[in-house]
Amino acid sequence: METPQNTPVLSLDALRSGDRQELGRLIDQYSPLIYRLLLSMLRDPSAAEDALQETFIKAMRALPEFEGRSSLSTWLYRIASNEALMMLRKKHPEVISLEQGGQDEEGEAEPIQIVDWCCLPESELMSSEARQQIDAAIGQLPESLRLVFLLRDVEGLSIRETAQVLNLSEQNVKTRLLRARLRLRELLSGYYSERMAMRRENE
Image: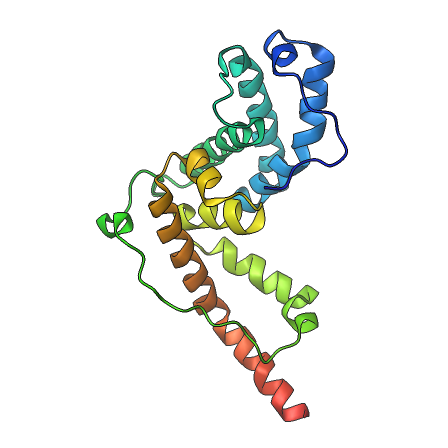
């Protein structure tokens, strides 16, 4: 998991007691990470800022009861994820919750090989244009798959941490992550196929 660099460890006792300085440090350290996740989920800077504010308001209210069974970052990601999903459901009531979904999502993931776009250099795979295509594809993922993908592959949480944030089993996280990656490959196949064809023509 990505964590703030070169910063002292926050005092949980001080946070629980409402120490203003420590609360300020909590916000300063984790706001960029939480905002990035919210923006990826909501795809609206204004909505992401509102959700970020609500995340820390709810966190401050709940800190006295926080037992420290998970890390502060995992706990904050959980609050932020719930806030984003709640906002999405208000705008789109048809959004399926993480606890719902098809029965087969509880099953074992099939051993499917995910082949890289090996014929393209990294400069093309990660170009500005490619990043736009990837971001657009991520936005097309169903919410239950998008959040798992963002937490695991974008934010860098482990399978276990992602499961803790979303209150899912680790196997369920693995299954959804595989499906998200396969769906992204499907969504991006046209774009990268064109890039590969253009590269062959120029060789």
